Image 1: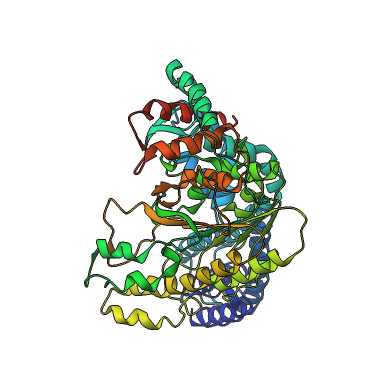
Image 2 (image 1 turned 60 degrees about the horizontal axis):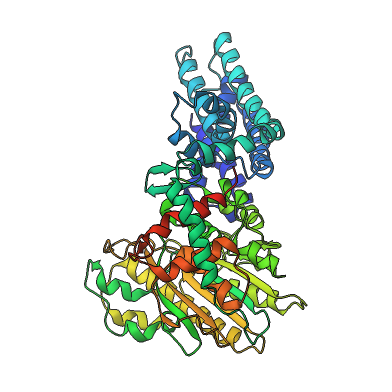
Length: 569
């Protein structure tokens, strides 16, 4: 037994060293257990210790290669988390056939080879122990032939399953990818993703004739109040800077903290949250989510849709991005823009690369372009992303350009040397919970980067629009946000040219669903029926949850009809 443990530890350490960039305590435990399991099964199977060690090395490397290949060849549509979300919402009495169809991708996507290996080895060990004489696991111990066969069959089953899950991917991709996307969309209680209230599904067929009538009327009203698009500037460059898990720290003043409140000096510490001479509009931004699920706020911006209109479990990047007839990006493309998306992480995360292209982006850039400072977690700092954006903008272009930038430096927050700059003045806020100090340190760096970028962008001769916003509040240990502010962040819309007279400057609390139409109107770009109606409602409906004025309530349902028609079956 001791020889197996020592050999497993040595092999595990050696192989983990080869993969040290991804080394964590969890990965060490997983890899050690995997090696130990293989050696143990090998001893039972071959009754020879060193042969079992060699067998363990070969099989471990084979499974490691298979695991990497499985991740590499797995189609983005076929993510087991999507299938899991779908199955949560199935009514298996009415959707039983569709449920059965999803078992294939669910099993091959969910079952990790290490789980299979550990479980199979445990079964082999327990069963073989009943037949051993003398010290268990001893290489000299005799093993009954039926149990050797059982162990051999167990190992063969593991190898066969992993091989089958890889070779089946092209078949499953063709057979299930569309079903998976359609099922998430159709069977998760959201045929057109529209909800009267959270959790109460509605579809296009259930809209009343009155609501359909108001859909026509709201379009007419929107057309009648279109702002003057005769700007004296050419089509401006557009930058949308999407700050994940970012909010104005002054909100903490109104939150219950474990050790007090922030002082008034928070007012002057973070310029990015303050209005400036180039600010067009700013204020509180209703995002409808808390603590995560950034893909839903990205979708809400692109689709002009309220977050509460679709399920909390919706993985919009996978299931809905490709079904939109019209998006913010597609409006820009009609106007002749070249659109580039820049993310602070790899493109497979959140299905970001595919969803951005589905929304209408021409090109996607991730960490392979940014060369992030933190190579261990492959996530770029705000400074990395800002430098990447400057490189992209330095490329010559004869077309107007738009950039969608997604940062993640404030994600968490969690301890990290990369994301802990010297915050200096943070200490003057006294004894605050560690989670609060972590966030203040990070947002101080975000403020520095965004403030410098704002200055550089709006000092250009070329007309430029910058929208930077927070996509949701993070969960911070020691902080209980007030319910009235829990689902709110901030936004700043800035430009280096005068807005048209019909755009009212100043503080205007808003919703993520209105962000795209604000940019379209400021840039003088034809908004199309959906975003024209969106802008009309933006002037009539207030926070939170689209509390419309009495005169506009009847148009609310009409806009929902327009939004539902924007999503293909």
